[in-house]
Length: 145
Image (cartoon, rainbow, N blue to C red; front, side, top):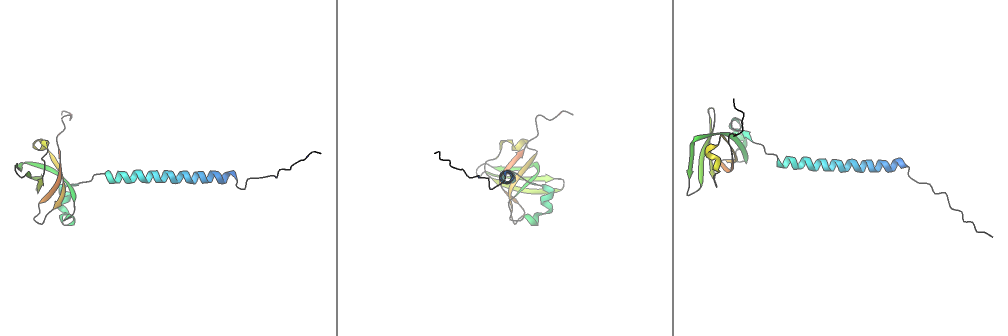
């Protein structure tokens, strides 16, 4: 006699579409998480600054806050004390003059600079106390006119 073992008919309890839907949802969640991480890193690394007229118009709003201000450098106002490493200068745009004081290493390009981005706080006397400065110089590669 021959023994015959019957195998039960096993059918999948889930349809193939349900499995595809799970992978689709997982893929969308992964892509969304990656997009969020990229956008968050860009926002942390972006550097915004106010122009001198924008800052001047909203000084009260920014009192005591760290802010970046960009303005044309008034070359005639530059004063540097070599012993204390204190740099004083004005940013001047039209009739707007903003005195700035910076303590630290002075950029070599200061005397050639056209404009300055200063980061710091406005003090009670209206002097911008910068903790860092970036000097923007004219480009050597500008098109001749």
